[in-house]
Structure formats: C-alpha cells, structure tokens
Image (tube, rainbow, N blue to C red; front, side, top):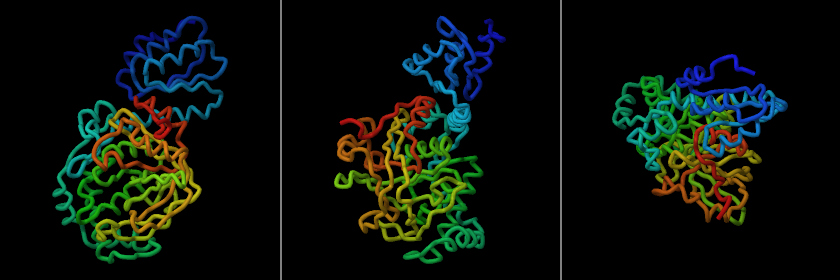
Length: 387
C-alpha cells in the first residue's frame, strides 16, 4: 500500500516538533521504511502497535539496540496511548523549563554546565546571586508574610516545637521573595547553595514542591533535574535525602530537614507535619513530615546527565533518631548489602553531597522508568542490582 503522504516531506516537517507519536496500523514484509524515516528524525518518539497490525513489529526492537529515543508499545490496551502521550510531555516540558540556581549549581560536573544541561535534557540553567533574593525579601509586604505563615504553616501544623512565630514568618517572607523571582524569571525550579543560611530555605522548597514546582536544597542540580522529570511524568514531588544503609533491616534509612507535605502530588492531601528547627545547626525553621508506612516508593537520582539510578522499595517504619534530620523513614530494599557495596554504581562520583543525595518518590516506577530513560536518552541502572 502506498502511504497517503510523502514520508520525506512529513519527516522534514517534523524537525521542529517536540516529539512524535506514531500509531502502527499495518505493514507486511521487508523492513518498515516509512516508519524508519520518521524514527531517524531523532525526536523523542512513542510507537503504539496493537497486535495484528502486520509483521513489521519484528523490526522495531532494533531501534532500541541502536540507541534511538523510541518507546515501543506492542499492546492491545488503548489506555497505553494516554501513557505514551504523558511520556512525550516530559522532553517537551524539559525543553521549556528554566532552573534558577541561587549562588550557582552544585553537583556532578556535567549537570553544573548550563550548555550541557541544555543540549542533553533541554532546560535553561541560570545562576542568580543570593543578594538578589535577600533584596527582594526586603520588599515583601510584612502583612503578606504573616498571612502566608498563618495560612500554610502555623494553622495546619500539628505542633510547633523550637521555632518562634516570628522565625516562621521570616521563612514565609523568604518563600514569597523566591516565588516572586521565579515568576519574573519564568522559572519552574530553583535550587540554592545558601539554603542553610538565614533565612533557611526549608519551608520555601516544601511549598514549591507541594505546588508542583521544584525546590532543591544545597544547590543539588542533579536532584533538581531528577525531580523535574519525575514531576512531569508521574506528577509527584521528590524528597531529597541523606540516606544511610542498615543491613540488619535490609533497608535504606532516609532523612533530611526539607520535605514536601503533599507527597502524593499537588492535588493530594497534606501529610501531618511538625515545625522544628534544623538538626545540625539547631536553628532556623524545618519540617518533620509524617510519611505513610506501607507506601511503595522509588529512590532515584540522575547522574552526570546520562544515567538514572534507582532503587525500589517500601516504607516500613518512621524513626526519630536524634542524630538524623527531622523527617525520617526506613525503606526496605532488595539487597541492602549490595546497595552499600555498589553505591553510585561506579557512575556517580564527586564530593559528599553529590555522591550522597538521593530523591525518594511515592510510587512504584520501575517499569515506567524504562520508558522514561529511553525517551530522555539516559541509561537506567538499578543501584545495588549487581556488585
């Protein structure tokens, strides 16, 4: 059968698109030249091929072996079309994302290079000075900061332990300043190497993540990019963590002082939380968020812009160890000893923060991550899967 359009003309027209969604309707004999020309455009592509559409499906897997950014869906379930369209939103949204790094990004060398971030994943990475944020803080209406603190933090909190009401209002004022700058800069994400200063960024990042944006502590650009991809695809925020391994429990114990409260996504209910100070410095304002025991989670981190590490598991308990940060929980893992010995999977290296930080998300994303990795052109590794 002759295609209804000149495939070369269609391929040329597709050059400026964000992605391609192809529905395979029919085809017999030989390799599929029409579809191949569209795949060769090089765009992130999803190919839906229901059974009995012909024998060309045998040739499709070769595109994976060639490293093409094409997700293959050989399925009779038409609901997978929705899933495919959702996947294509990720590279498209990444191309239109702007990340603000207050004081500069911190992490793997590739992820700290704006040119490489733009080329490999799409976002614009822009450094802004901390002084600008502090100056904008001074322009925020004090009454607006009080209203923000009362409505989002003081009222809903289960308990307020160390911080004073005034300290919480100062943190709310900082959030309003950061949000104002993000609006001015048309940014969807922010990270800061100054978040441990005054005022602390914990409440700011928590609310941004609650709203479906990304706020990352310690300037962690690798985790910022990870959270953006997961948010665009799965609609959930990430919890940046300083994990430790406990082989006695076959687990990874997560803890940090910054956490979203809407861990099921922007439309979900807020988890119970207590307002505390930051553990290490005994100052500022931080959060102790009560996570859901029994919740299936995925721990992940993008490394060097080219590898996505992940570890599946489930929350088994909540802890309150005084040596750890305020929000704490235990994730059972497939093999804690292998995870310990294979930390970083020989691809993630750098200083302590870069090597240590991981991001935890509510949900089992093992299978969807295979498709996301293909579409974004990164390698997927289950951390601790081999030694």
